[in-house]
Length: 382
Ligand code: HEM
Image (cartoon, rainbow, N blue to C red; front, side):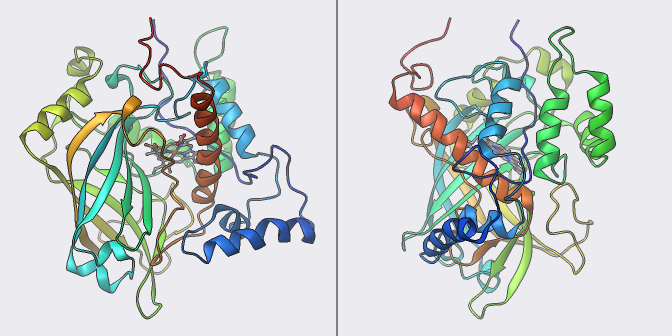
């Protein structure tokens, strides 16, 4: 029987994208890291090393390399050429049309250009690219919006409303604690106990995962950015925000019984039927933080009732298989941001960027070396 993959993934507090060796924080070394990073940031793209440093997570033991090593170990197998998380998915394309309200909050061109082309990816969590769709609680949407001035906004969102843990270290610990014990095929209760004692916030996520109804389609799933960002407008005013793609399709729940009987590929089959009839739409909902709301902790949702604006509408009208589609070789790095959107100090955000790069490098290298015939659609696995 196929092993179920984890519904979530992880990472730690301080990671060096370029090396598995923890960084010694001497001045020369910091300058080597930061000066080139700032130079690149100056041309408009936010660079991970700079944010990694400012978020305070360079200097401890867990590196991006080690993080991805642990993901591969706890996945039980390396699926060459595939993403080390959210590996099963499809490519989608369409456009984003901004609404008037967002332009006063952010000068980003995406909120000022009438029609922005979008390349995206819809996926499920987990590392097995052939997992039955119903085995994964978490579904995902990743987007790359490219404006007419050459800038890009990349974002990767999940169906969970908040992250299980507040730090990259927490996610790293979670990966290890929830890995099946080879002797029993289940997580070791003692390791789980130690994990929850160290990261009690993870109990909130468990409560969500065990009670929230499952939607029956990508099209009626809300995808949440979870990490906080800052919008910067024309006069330099900054607003702390979180964003989500709220479906225009009505929510339809899928029972456990329906999931048990569902086809392995029911999500892509459903989406194919829908786009054949016309575009599928989501509203981009931006939630504005009130003073005191946590902007550096993705495990803590903001209270209900915060000001929200609809900043635009996404419509997707085409899908292609991942193996031969335009999203396969994209790293949806959440820190590739246009002028007008800045990262928050959330350490998870900074860590994501470095770990995605490590996963991306590994899978692209495998493809380049001809080691990834399944991922490139040249082989049907037996
Ligand atoms: C420390 C925390 C996290 C780590 C270490 C992590 C790790 C990863 C890795 C390794 C990938 C594969 C990247 C690639 O090969 O291109 C990935 C993909 C993804 N992650 Fe995370 N992740 C973290 C947190 C999050 C959070 C908070 C969200 C959303 C709220 C998220 C959403 C996604 C999505 C949507 C994808 C698939 C992107 C695509 O379609 O290419 N992750 N993650």
